[in-house]
Length: 325
Image 1 (tube, one colour):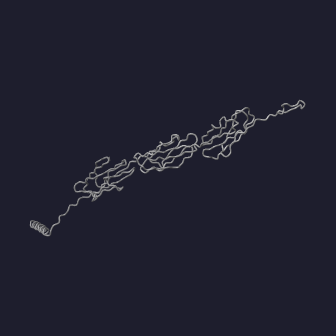
Image 2 (cartoon, rainbow, N blue to C red; image 1 turned 60 degrees about the vertical axis):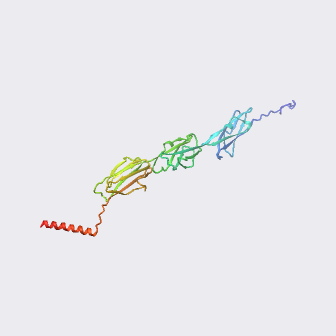
Image 3 (spheres, rainbow, N blue to C red; image 1 turned 45 degrees about the vertical axis):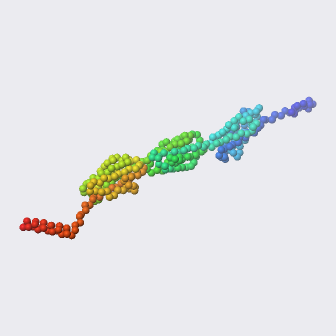
């Protein structure tokens, strides 16, 4: 403008060149409102960007100056993605410099993992389960799980493709836990199952006689039901029959005493009756049968009968003495 239509008599003019300069800011948005700062870089299709990188946070955006550009350049902002977040930088790709600003959004990585429970005997009980993952934060630290209600965990702030392992805190008494299906499972799989198998139990049948020891060596016959093997066996005083490796369930044992004997007692260590033994997982029950010898009643004689018996005895003695002499 200073060199337009200038009088020749003036003899001079000045043309001024102003370096093209514009500002560009990159705003930050964290899904969880983290106050952290992130390193951001800006590149433009024309001009020089300064500084090379700058820090952006939700409170303070990154500010850049673009100078010496030509035409209408576009600019692209990129960040060093913080661990545990996924970056959405689409809004800062090829943005017109004239727009002057863009926003990079960081969403905190979040996933869910469910631990299912399976009791092979359908037990409705709940157990405590914990979950650990190779990356991220697990919440809650532990949770109850049953066949009807699994344990659900939230995993946040993870990076990459973590794996998770679920463990049972305190295997229920009488059960064995199979946690193999919950070891090193990809978080993306979303679930796994811990199986609890009921341990077998033991039922012991003991024979006791009255009087004891039984000098007659009498054998007492027993019949077992509910799937116990053998179904028939015999015991003498002090002997026992052991049923090992018995699955939890209801069983029965009955005795058939021989003539001259009768069952005077039958009880089990868990308080149940031998005809309905409730065996739990891993339980050991002892049932004791007491068999008593029948007492032969002595007849009661009247006084006349006693005198007659005494007289006959005395007569027998007299006759014997007479033969001797």
